[in-house]
Image (tube, rainbow, N blue to C red; front, side, top):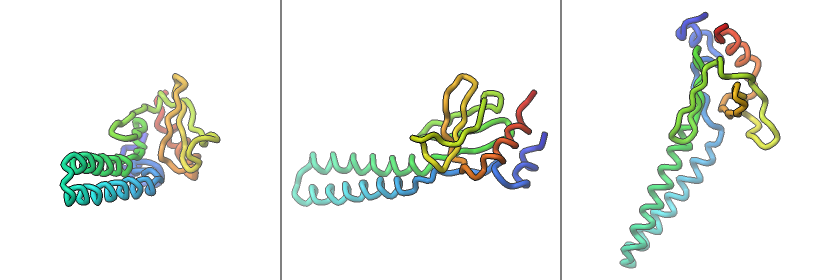
Length: 144
């Protein structure tokens, strides 16, 4: 079994941060935040204190959602997979992964999904072009 440093030097799927392909979502949330900030300034000029408070709250929500969307990603490690969705990390060891699948009809078409031994599906951010490489990596690091 390779050390993490050897895996990283080998390149490919191991150790890389595979980010979400939905950068447009960050732009949408930042646009929403900017619009709410404009409305907050407008409410301040018209002396509507509740309008200012609510639109500043909505501005904060827009900024927080854009940061959360920006931080989504997947890390492939020798002992398993870590997937970040929102503020939560989900971690699976290679023993828990039953299969690596191409996306289904209603899933994001550019990323792979993992099926666990319990039957759950976990959508990753690993591109479908790395399917065979990820399968080889998982097989090499799965303990007998």
